[in-house]
Image (spheres, rainbow, N blue to C red):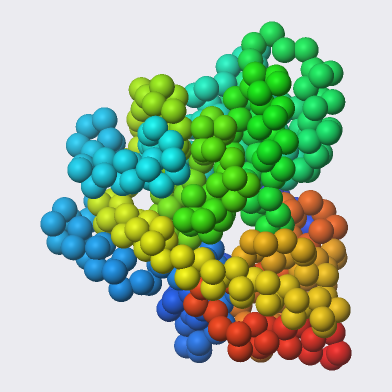
Amino acid sequence: MSAWTERAVTVLDAIEQAGRTRELRALRVLDGRTALRNGRVVLLCASNNYLGLAQHPRVRAAAQEALETHGLGSTGSRMTTGHSALHEELEIALAKHRGTEAALLFNTGYMANLAVMTTFVREGDVIFSDELNHASLIDGCRMSRARVVIYRHGDANDLEEKLRATPVSGLRIIVTDGVFSMDGNLAPLADLVRLKRAWDTLLIVDDAHATGVLGPRGEGTAAHFGLAAHEIDLHVGTLSKALGSEGGYVAGAQTLIAWLRQAARPFMFSTALSPLVIAGAHAALQIATDEGERRARVHSRARELRMALQARGFAASQGITPIIPVHIGDTGAALALSAHLDQMGIFAPAIRPPSVPVGTSRIRLTVTADHTCEDVETVANAFASFASR
Ligand code: PMP
């Protein structure tokens, strides 16, 4: 066995021993509520397709048209041959939707976060980061070469103490998820804006799960709290969740976006998003903005499912987002519950370390605008049947 094979086997064994081996399960997603799995239709309760737009006829048609007119790939980085009018139009539309001066597309939300953390931040700066921030922000912090100070989850008092206690030779940055991906709760944005002003920090909000979902027209977490868009320096968003497509973006003031365009390595050194993905996302953005009833539906379903689970004795989190974690704690128990749901025709994987802290394994349920009231009952009853088995 070569030294490299030996190392690979050792690592894989360790993952196995720790019970962290992941198995990929192939699905064909049919809409916001169902998918085909092993030839049978299952109720999908884990996707981020919150508005059901990934399969919307107008989204498909826009993507198909772009495929016909532009072909499949973008053929190069935005700096070379990959830039098109479609990219530019979507950036203008995203900035308008967010209420910012400008926006810039990235190939994924993950890359958008890496770009923000590595472009603006320098050695000598200090990043103040919520302890439950998304992995892409954590990786961006690591790559930034700045000192990182972690504050307690959602705790503005702890952040304030840490701002006060931390000497800084360069500049300060506060970074947080707007909606936390595994818990579905919101950052205390009004407090963070107050601290940002008091300490003259850059405030970065990753709004991946709020785009299209929160705010009167799906503008995101700031709009939900009635905060003006410019109070947040950089809004990171994704096209891959409520907008049903792929890609990420950063929205903010012209100067900051111009800096990203000139210097962000994930922007410069990667092939631009496919025109069909861009056209689909643009159509989805229009629907998400205009069709408030989709947003109203997803919020109703979320409320109903929280209540139905709580009524059956499950620790479904409080909150207002379509992300509803049911906390189990032990990984084995969470996996057993997920397997039970699978048997009942419900797809809802267990979320376990390293995606969440040790001892906090859970079923992360999500609802979409396509789910029905009957679906909510089906899911809640499946949980109840696990408890009484
Ligand atoms: N930020 C958060 C909070 C996320 O949940 C995700 C996706 N899981 C991302 C960023 C990355 O977005 P994308 O999937 O578009 O790379």
